[in-house]
Image 1 (cartoon, helix red, strand yellow):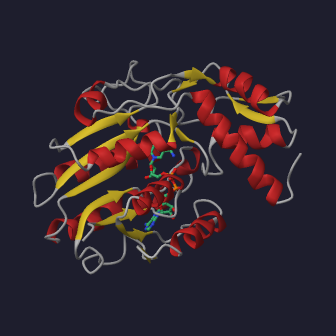
Image 2 (image 1 turned 180 degrees about the horizontal axis):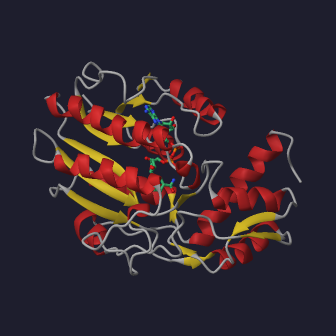
Amino acid sequence: MSSTIMVTGSLGFIGSRLTGQLLDDGFDVIGVDCATDAYNPAEKLARLETLRVHPHYRHSGVDLADASLDGLLSGVEVVYHLAGRAGVRESFTSFAKYRHDNVEATDNLLVSVRRAPSVRRLVYASSSSVYGNADLPFREDGHTNPLSPYGQSKLDAERLCLESDGKDVQTMALRYFTVYGPGQRPDMGLRLFAEAAIERRPLTLFGDGTQSRDFTYVDDIVAATRRAADTSVSGLAINVGGGSRITLLEVFEILAELTDEDITINYESFARGDAMHTGASLERSESILGFKAQVDFRSGYSAQVKWLQSLLSNAGRKG
Ligand SMILES: NC(=O)c1ccc[n+]([C@@H]2O[C@H](COP(=O)([O-])OP(=O)(O)OC[C@H]3O[C@@H](n4cnc5c(N)ncnc54)[C@H](O)[C@@H]3O)[C@@H](O)[C@H]2O)c1
């Protein structure tokens, strides 16, 4: 009998990719996702249609913060907890929703996980935004200083998870660094930039473009997340980064080549809550997870741009 896995946030950008790969590898997956209003739920419902046809996928649309999860966890061995409300800027105005989806949902899930006899491990999707403007590279044993309510809520939820380690369950928190690739959320920069380029519109840039990010391809994130379920180490936060930090100005040069379009930029002032640079120390992920990112930025962004071209063309939005 194959083991049963729970993926929270299974209709999200990363969670749906993880779920699809687990199903392909023969696991039974229980997906929990209530398709929140954080962005157009139509994208999530389209993913549900794809997952639902798989005979080994079972979906629950409960809100993790409000429902008892005891029944759903029966027989589940591993919980990948990816549900959450992502995005920095929105968190300054929708504070309560961020607490609900990130902290209260995690707290409530942990109550059920700790009393579920079959669950041996929970892997939590934390974020590089817990670091703020820390010294590069960001080290897990270094300082955390979130610059936004989003970052703070991810840090609070991460602490809840790690405090539960050893209390009837093993836990691990992975600090994801800006994730991109096909399926990326519609509020994220790389998608907004590529949509503007494809539709031959000016793109909006907050700042001067010298800020840099350690972009991480979605399949690399999925690979590291799966490894975190199978290591003997627990109770730790571990960075997952792509390993090659680049500036947004460099991103635009690559985007111009990938789309064969001139990029026009509307400059706005730097956005509140965004770190100037992000870069992961990868020592822990290499030594504990045996993880090394496989996809370089140009190849990964090329895959994302192709996906987006097809999405926009199907929606009649081609430039
Ligand atoms: N995408 C990134 O670059 C990135 C970086 C760092 C961390 N993360 C974290 O990884 C996780 C997945 O990110 P994503 O980009 O796939 O986001 P996403 O918004 O596409 O997916 C999150 C999913 O969680 C669901 N959800 C939210 N609150 C819920 C609740 N209370 N009950 C049930 N379902 C709920 C949403 O409906 C959504 O489908 C998030 O926790 C995010 O904070 C993402």
